[in-house]
Image (cartoon, rainbow, N blue to C red; front, side):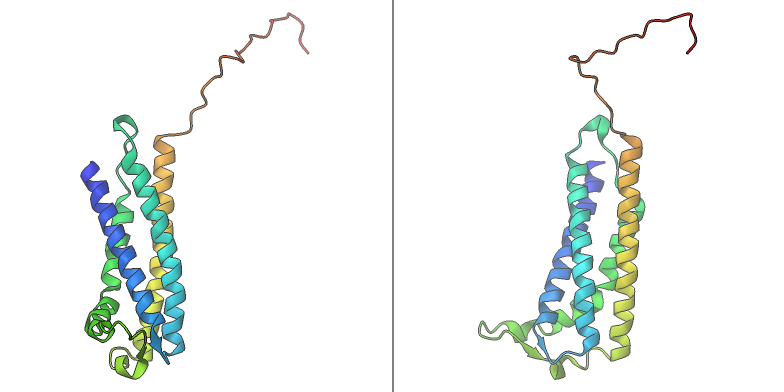
Length: 173
């Protein structure tokens, strides 16, 4: 059971790192089209949501035996889909990695990467990323809800304030 959370957590960390690398790459593309700049905004939202998933999974991993709960299978499926959807962007990143090996180089011009994506392809990637953000939010809510449903908050009575039985009167008020 702990292995499944560890697998979810490592996949989440892998996707978070991919998102960060892609965002850094896109930030360093000079003269990029507006479609590519919009992807950065979506990547930012996706990154924030993935950080929340990571924190949730870390908290789940810390739970001990009776409170331990397996992550939602929906969450795992969505994380795998996001990883698969980021693959074309990671491929471009790998292809152009050599251009950034020079420590003095911080930017790359769009003309060097323009063969990688057309505007239509960028719009398709952006649309998939919007769907991924929505699905990941839903999966995170489902995972959190299942945790709360299985382990509801229990009120622990305070011994300083014992419950008093009300006296039983024959009178009806």
